[in-house]
Length: 153
Image: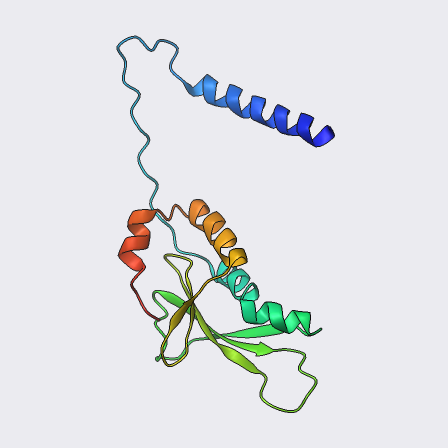
């Protein structure tokens, strides 16, 4: 009951704030649309959040371990448009490679790529949810997704 009341109050407060911004007289007046905000690139920290939510990371955590990553900065990486990460099993108990893989995050679209010899987009429910939030926060619209969505790491 309390959460419903709080939600109702938030809705009412938002409605009143928006109503206060509306013109007093709407007779023969046009309300001009606000200019579309320019998209902004993701920060490294936001890209790291996406890396933490990789399906591979989820699997490692289910096994009682965790992941770590290192930003890749060599000339082989497209650092202008992507954050590149070497992702490792940070608590591997057995002998063997700690490498989980190499992944890239598109700074313009929040897309995550598995940098295998044939790069492919990483896609799961958690990533899509966070990508939606990041895209809204960074004003990444359909036009931006089209312009930068075909880029490969």
